[in-house]
Length: 158
Image (cartoon, rainbow, N blue to C red; front, side):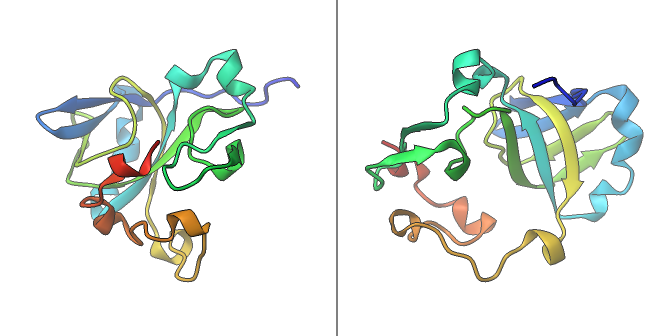
């Protein structure tokens, strides 16, 4: 299938002193206007370290979760190994510096140097689901972004 997208990185992720920064290229800095009005944002990023042909053709694999002992489909996981290695993270916005193109966040589940694809403000009306469900093996996971900060995620992966 022929590519139909012309993806362009708008910046990169860096980590310094326990915080993460989204470094926005100068051409895209005007798009940050009023992002600071929001407490959270959705960040789309390119999992460039998982952009190998093998990773992009992986459709099933053993579940990486400690309490799940079965095969799992790529689309039932958050694995970066997928046909289009696009990551999605919800972040808390600590600071937005439009002039310097720096967004400071406490954490993002992407490696430093990862290319950023897009930023969208978090809207509870369209981004929050009050009644949802998942598999039995992950029902004990936190039910919010805030509770996730203190959860022992390392114990969840095999």
